[in-house]
Length: 245
Image (cartoon, rainbow, N blue to C red; front, top):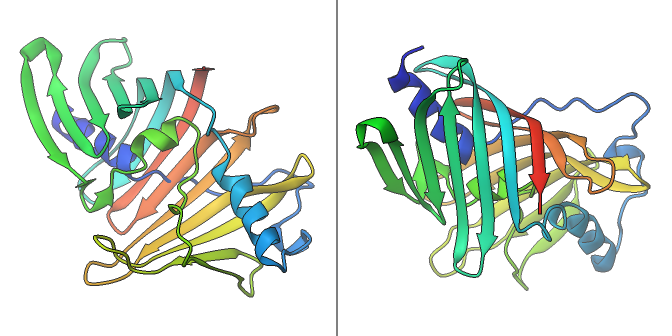
């Protein structure tokens, strides 16, 4: 794969995020868990997803990425630094070749991204809000082990669908379109653990992204694997080593 193809696909993995659901043997699905029935119980289930990684301030390590799209496909390692501060969220992804050399550096700050080749002092691409139609709002969050979640909204509606999934519908607000978060859970450490999420944006520019998560850490429950899929393609990420602060 050429350097040109690797770079855009890497950003795609930042903003996308997707994985195949692969629950372990003997793990109960959300349909077998005690279903929430009250507003308080709905919020407990949502919090079981949204609390993952929330106390994390910084993450460093290396990941193995696999991307597939209409333009190109490939696998490659990368070094990751992600952190959340009072000033905002920042992500630095150094794409390396199999010999350890740097192919490109992708940096994301809040919802702005830049792709550059440091050795050539060359910026290949930059933008904001989204890349290839995929929101950048969760790029840093995903690498910090967090699950995409709705913002606080007193108007959000909760329900369980026929498949035993928690559905959170957020109405239109000033500057944002209606959203729908559909979480699938399995039992882990005696509580519901989010193994998949279908996120949908309604309105004039509809968009759907499917996320799956797997291999939760023994103590924190933070996933070691994640994947994201959209109509544009898919990306898989697997941590090789990770230091969490």
